Amino acid sequence: MSDQTKPILVAVVGVGLVGAEFVDQLLSLPKEYFQIVALVSSDATLFAADGLAIDRSSWKGVYQQSKGPTIISALAAELYALVNAGRKVVLVDNTAAETVAHMYPNFLTGGVNVITPNKKAFSSDQELFDSILRATAQGGARFLNEATVGAGLPIISTLKDLVATGDTVLFIQYILPSENKLSRTQVTKIEGVFSGTMSYIFNNFSTPSSGGPSFSSVVKAARDNGYTEPHPGDDLNGADVARKLTILSRMIPVLREALPQGYKSVDTRSLVPPALEGLETGDQFMSRLPDFDGEFEAVRAEAQHENKVLRYVGVIDVEKRVVKASLEKYENAHPFATSLGGSDNIIMFHTKRYGTRPLIVQGAGAGAAVTAMGVLSDLLKLANR
Image (tube, rainbow, N blue to C red):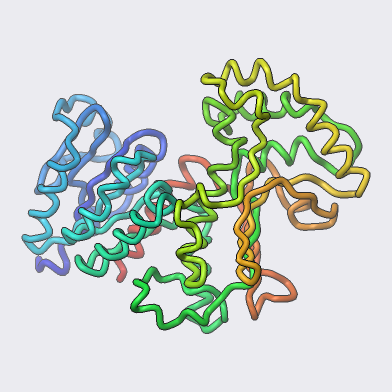
């Protein structure tokens, strides 16, 4: 078997909910295409340069018996050696760790491709993002991050297709400033419900009918159902939406450097009452949230009086150079009011071809299965390149 037909070597970092689902999905594919060489978590590292002897029924037991230390730099050295031996190597980062994200430039410079749902590297400060672009250009490796914005939803890939077929939409391929030859391409506007948690909360809290459950009771239900972070304030502060907006904004040439501090530069409206911002635990937060139900009820009543609903949305307005995450009101007939259910995401793309009736991508935007699917889809794209 030649180097070109040998399986792609995959190192998986993070084997929690999403990571474990990804490994299961990957091991269901024919073994001649992909070979797992590493399973890594904060507790242990399992590595074999010639591939781990695992299958869907055995990998968890084999991994749980491993006791190797977790040293990402040591894993990097092993992967560089495989690249130097002529193998195609991919790091799949299923964590949300800053430390791993900051290693992306090193991996890419060393020729290791990176695929991830981890938003940290692409939504943090401009310096880290630029270093990733430089590393990609220098090392020839690629990074793919479809799952950072809509889990398994084809948000980024849809935009790439629009560009490839000549629509005057944003230029999706990541390029260095000196290579920006297509800066004229532009999207008019991107807007959507990017957070599954916020979607669930406002689908249940704000409806066309009068009244409804209290805000705190809806947040409690979302937490009980596992839709929120352990501390619901980490969802209600809007940071997750701001990160996704940053990732998309940096794909638009005219906006790519508009958010120097990443998601912190996004105009974000937090729904965390100021009096609750300092609470450390989710239980403390939930015990006091009912004190502010009256404030949220007033906002809901105002929207219902106007025949509108409340939705927490992200907006990228290219012409106005506005990137914001905020609570907005929409007419009862608007797709954001009529089309959403559960924790769905819905994203609208306004382009030349889709000016009158915007292109809409909608579906489950959270969950281990769909997120792992988005990661696996990127791996298949890399294999078919």
